[in-house]
Amino acid sequence: MKLVPKAPFHFDATVHKPDHFPSADNDWQPGIRWQTMFWQGKKLGLKFENKGTIKKPEILLHVWSKSDLSKDFIRSLKEETKYRLCLDVNLSEFTRKLKSDPFIGPIIEKWQGMRPLNYSSLYEYLMIGLVLQNCTIKRSISMMQSLLENYGASLEYDSKKLYCHWQPEDLRDVSEEELRNLKIGYRAKSVKRITDTFLNGEVEELELRKRTKEEQREVLLNLYGVGPATVWYILFDVFHYFDELNHISPWEQKIYSKLFFNKYPEKPASVERLFKHFERYGKYKMLAIHYIWEDLWWKRKNENIPWLEELIRI
Image 1 (cartoon, rainbow, N blue to C red):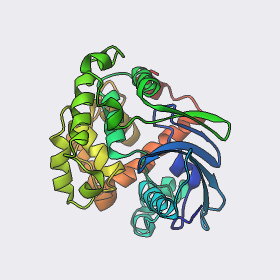
Image 2 (tube, rainbow, N blue to C red; image 1 turned 30 degrees about the vertical axis):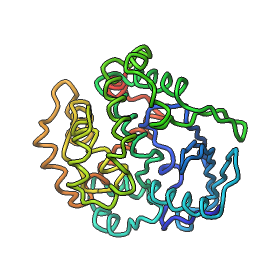
Image 3 (tube, rainbow, N blue to C red; image 1 turned 60 degrees about the horizontal axis):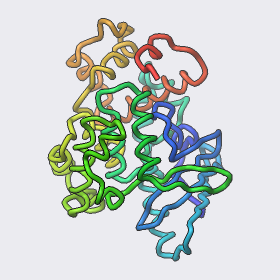
Image 4 (cartoon, rainbow, N blue to C red; image 1 turned 60 degrees about the vertical axis):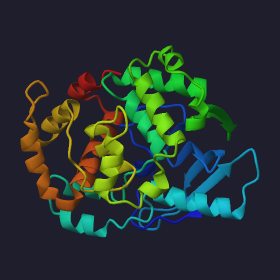
């Protein structure tokens, strides 16, 4: 199927985020993204191909499935994909308001049309958030791989072998002890409790999208093991609030301090100073930080940044 994002649109900077830790549900090369997806009971293999330009964008989306897909299913998949990849978002006001800023203006120009995105369902995103808690990226990668191998589904398509994320039903009869045996530590209890919440229908993602931001925040914070940092990410990545910035972790504090004030991680700027600084970006403060953050990680793909490597510790 053909997808036409609202121009401008930067394909690679949108579909591939170098700051995301590697996982076995996707692959990328310039101009192409392979991504598995579970949608309406079906495990899908997706391939996004760039067929346009920044000013005249077009994406060709190939879909693989073991069963036939109805026209209604394809239509719903298209709409969900547009939502998750922010393809209908108009960035003109964001660009107009911030293009003259001496710090972020050149970055906006460099990555013109880049969108935040989330390939995952809310449940899947929560699982990712859990494996990212309180550990090195290397361990997060290891935990996610173990969970995918044990509870995900292996899909082979277009000469790729990837995993499709597990769903709540896949863990219905899995005990907390079994999860702990995968060496995910205390997160086993959170995985099980959140999974049960979804199985019991206490959280419905599509219904939650219709609620206000503060109602969404309240629902998310009531989930076992979910804190302000995970909720902040969800409100930005999953529900697309571009002003959402209510938490800065110690790790992010160190990186922001170096980026904005050239203060080394050992003596970072205070969180209060950072929040005050970010207010200059107004209702787009989190989107602005996303541009600055992604620019740093794209630089890392091409050059060594010692202070950043020390903080990543893959």
